[in-house]
Amino acid sequence: MLRQESSKDALSVLSNANLAGAHNYLIMDKQGDGFNVEAMPDAQTVTRLESAPIVHTNHAVSPEAQAEEAERPADLQPTQP
Image (cartoon, rainbow, N blue to C red):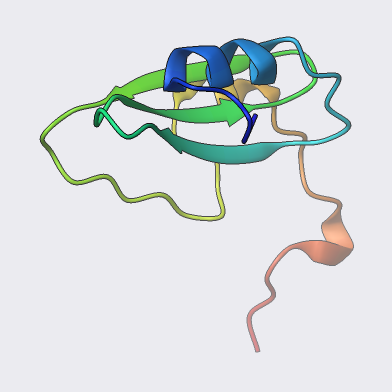
C-alpha cells in the first residue's frame, strides 16, 4: 500500500488483500484524497475522508462491520462487583 501513488490505488491494494482479522486503516495521499476503511476477511466498509474530523475507536463503527463481530464469550464480559 505504501508504494502506491494515490489513495485510490492504496485502497485497491487493501481491497484485494487476504486479511486474517479486523483492522482499521486511514489512507491519505499528498493531494488530500483519503479513506477510512474498516476491513475484515468477509466485509469492508469504506468512508471517504472529507472536511469533517474523523474519530475511530478500537470498536467497529459502521453497521456493516458491527454485523461481522462475534459475541464475546461470557468469561470476557464485564462483571459487576
